[in-house]
Picture 1 (cartoon, helix red, strand yellow):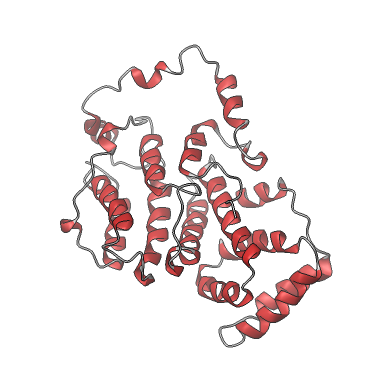
Picture 2 (picture 1 turned 60 degrees about the horizontal axis):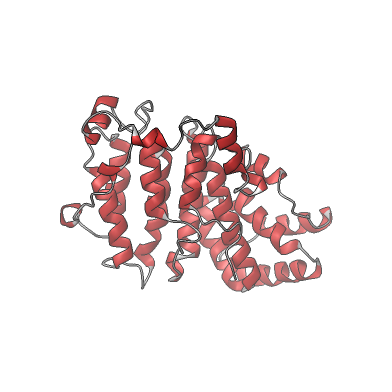
Length: 304
């Protein structure tokens, strides 16, 4: 529902209904044995109708990828067979935008279905980038900042599984397989999080499974010291077994400096200032999720 609502606010001109039906039919009948033949038919349809590539990228991510994780490998093979550069770029853009939409949803803490969609997008994001030996650029998404921001805002319940699914793809990469420095830096940050007192067991389990997938031992990973300096929202209880344990990491009351920059700024004005920086499709996001924008690139679309 969240993704469909966001999709309705985007100005994407769809192809005629007959073409949409043909594309849906092709995808429904696609398999590993006929993916090349079906991709050729799909390519003809996309090239015949101007503007259909952007629509198809959005359709693929929202209607297929987010809902059908078992077919990710098939859709990856399809995009490779299509070999349309603008389509690949549009798919990456749509994936990042919809992940941002879910992270900004007011229901992401309470809705397991939305978190499941986010995990699926994370798995897909890793497969179309890291698994293909392509880097995730900081201008598009900063996974370290995403984890740190989630720690502050009580969104670890959604972000840790998402990041873990992205990094899962490193297991099949030639470039990003550990001991790749970028991957190990992220693992060090997750190791610091793993050692935070009273972290929920399901979040620890996500980190343990990731380490096993990447064939690294948690005991061999040196944790960072980034989270201890981050101010945390103690009113949330989604990420920790109790708030006292989470507060203990900070070593006392939250410093007043964390609020000093907001003194005298009306909430509406602060919200408006963020809204002006966001794409139109994101203007309806709750204000407490706006900090996550820093973890995603400021570009609505990755530069060519």
